[in-house]
Image: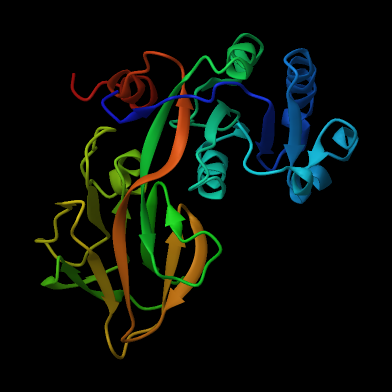
Length: 292
């Protein structure tokens, strides 16, 4: 992958665990991880919601509130949504996120759940590559105003079609009647943006893409935006409120006449991957050949 790499931690002495919403699917895996962590002298921690989800692991997982500083590693057992949640939580800390795919697509995962036994040992030995992942930021009153995949402005269910005015780099590019707008990073270009017929951007491309959800026009096209250019999305006066969604999670609303500015953030979080990972091989494995 051409994305910028950074050095992995010198040693893994502390790690946090984050899982998806099906604890019965990850309980056995946590036990295995805990056993191997002890072999490597690594203490495992978890947030309060994780401890509630896995009460039987109370003696194995220590409360994250006891952790002094950022952990050396964050281990995720889940799909892309859970990995994105981990990346947002660790944004700005330098903690690499190592994901095992317990979901469906798992585009961001380092490996699958079937390789947990063989991959977790190298993870505790810091035998992985760390990639500095870009993100998108905006000034919003939310806990983590950073998105690693995309920021979407979408019409609310059972409401009228939205009318969104778009400006890039201070220049208006028009108003579009649509169901919404998606601003996506290269990592997020294979998500909501891809479903909108937007372009796939290889990891390592510096910039982001703006695509439209169900535009009511024949001329709306996805736009690849330079990293220094700010995207402004304004909800037209007289329309209904629209939702602002970070990485698939609803965060706030944009009222009539209100605007939001979205900026490219070059080094938002750190993603751990096996040595020699290839973005194009990943696309082929997850989505199939680009042409036949």
